[in-house]
Image 1 (spheres, one colour):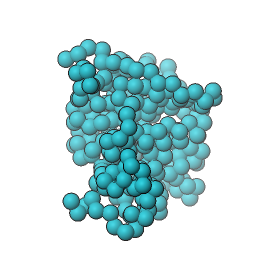
Image 2 (tube, rainbow, N blue to C red):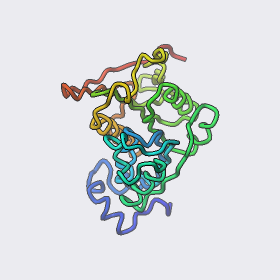
Image 3 (cartoon, rainbow, N blue to C red):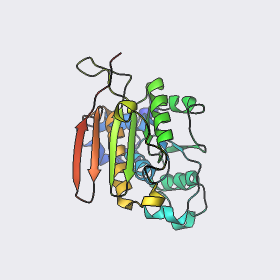
Image 4 (cartoon, rainbow, N blue to C red):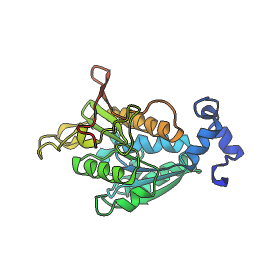
Length: 254
């Protein structure tokens, strides 16, 4: 297909990808053709969008309805000081255009929910959730499961974070169904139990680490390489620099 062909400038731009046997020219063409939806242009979404754009993902949709504030800049590296007060979508589009003109940004200025999200999710190949609340995380998990779209979902708290990949519409090698979000988190914690970043604080680098790992999982899924974190939860603690992975299963089959 013509939309997968890399021109001479792209071949040079992505040369370090193309020499990787796991990616090569075919993988880079898949990245160019891919459509990825990113929920949030904040702390997690910033490194996700930047690394996907740098990697050559052809179309990146971003869902966000917020504006840039000065306190965002400690971790939300998509945005600059002069962007304070601007729409995060506008700031993100400018940052991506400066980084890689071959990438198209599709803005979705809204809060996504079960009512308005189905058509949007269905227009993309996979979704990365960098939202900061359980309501959106459960909604995205349900929407992606219903649409048959892989979901990379990350969360952060102070100096730590977690990451997993959800494909509950598929079966594992042993014939059992892959787990969903509710198999990992059956219900949201009571309101107020988990403090927000504004209340508890957040090390800016924490969002950078987890967002970069989320982008890595997305690239693996697009190119069909490696072993994505399906049925596995990666937990990261930057204070002790510990990375641990636990396995989880579907609560019931069928």
